[in-house]
View 1 (tube, rainbow, N blue to C red):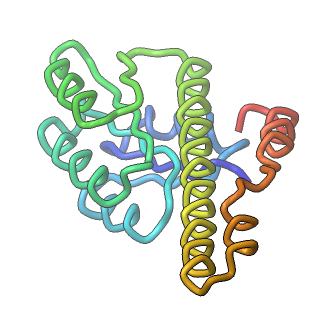
View 2: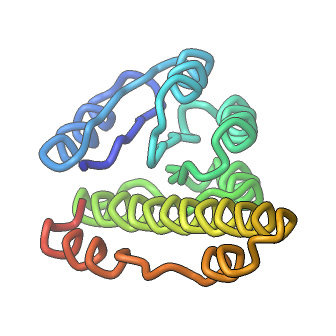
Amino acid sequence: MPANVLLLGAESPLMDRMAQALSAQARVSVSFCPGEALAQARRSDFDVVVVNFRDLLETGVLFLRNLKRANPLTEVITLSVPSTLRYSIEGMKLGAFADLSMPFEVEEFSARVAEAWKKKSRAKKGLAAFRRRMESLAASAAFAEAGQFDAAVCLSQPAEDSGDEEDRHEQRQGSF
């Protein structure tokens, strides 16, 4: 499945270039309004959100704070210029994956988005495995309470995970 990416900033040729650079290997949404972008993020499970601090300043930091509250696993890449360095630092404190200083090469941008997407994918897999394990342990406890100790022991054993095969499949598919 391709990455789901949201670009947030002012309407500009840069936004067009970033969207075009990612469009071959990701689903790309573009927003020029932080409020609209936050509403989109609450409706969709974006893997990566790119926030242009040059355009948004404090509004970008507020957006990032609210995004991370609503979707803590979403990875964020901030874009900055020297005059917005303090916002980039605040963004990193709030959990941004990376900050790219403008100007940057399209290849560097695409590579950072791919890295962020892979991190999000690993986190989702880890969370899913954790949930499965907790469900298994809860079922095991229920069987133990009912006196079904053999079933409880069987359920409490970790199951074999096929995640390694999924990881190899993703590596063959390319960067996204």
